[in-house]
Amino acid sequence: MHDKKLGGFKMTKVMILGAHGAMAQLVAERLLQETDDTLILFLRNASRLAKYEQNDRVTLVDGDVHDTAAVATAMSNADVVYSNLGGTDLDVQTQSVVDAMKQTGKSRLIYISSLGAHDEVPGKFGEWNHQMIGAYLPAFARTAELVAKSGLDYTEVRPAWLTNNTEVDYEVTTLADGFKGTEVSRQSVADFVVKVINQPATYEKASVGLDKAGTDGDKPSWY
Image (cartoon, rainbow, N blue to C red; front, side, top):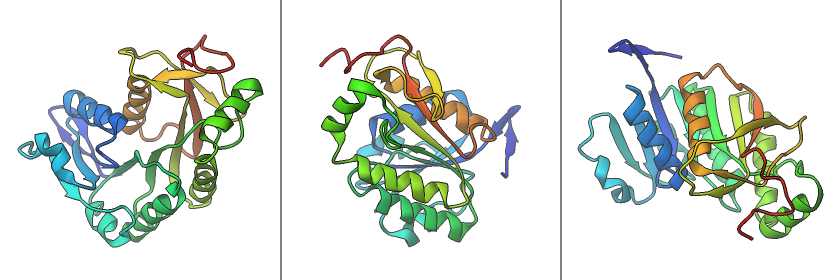
């Protein structure tokens, strides 16, 4: 990775895909406040993030992730790519990102997936989770497979059900551990992502689950 030094801190250029998402915005704010990183924020209708137009550390790119050429152009000088994309065609979107990364010689990808992407959620909670988001899980599973086969240095992040609680409180699990807990705050997931961006040699070629310890149950507390 090409790094610069500014004010004693490592400066990285981070591309965020799906940058209007709630988690993506938390990550962007943390990076702007705590690092000297510069950001490439890629999203449709970039005017939604007009608050960054005058920020000289932010480049706003209005584009569709299905347009591989546009993604490649935008990421041409990025060091790390963070994907906050989602939807029932997540695999199609992610394939475009992977293709753009290969075209531009990029290797470090951090992306948001979902609990259940590997059919790893046990018991009644696993059954409930599949009932609730089963329509999305095939795309997440296909995405995990294509990224694992891509040769990229990836980190797949599988959060539990998300809350807006103002807390950073989470545990990290591997696929071998099985999934634990039922919920986790968006701020916790953003914290993990920021840490991996700041230390990109960690969690390479890894799939991690994130949950708040002690939230085990048949479904999240608010259901």
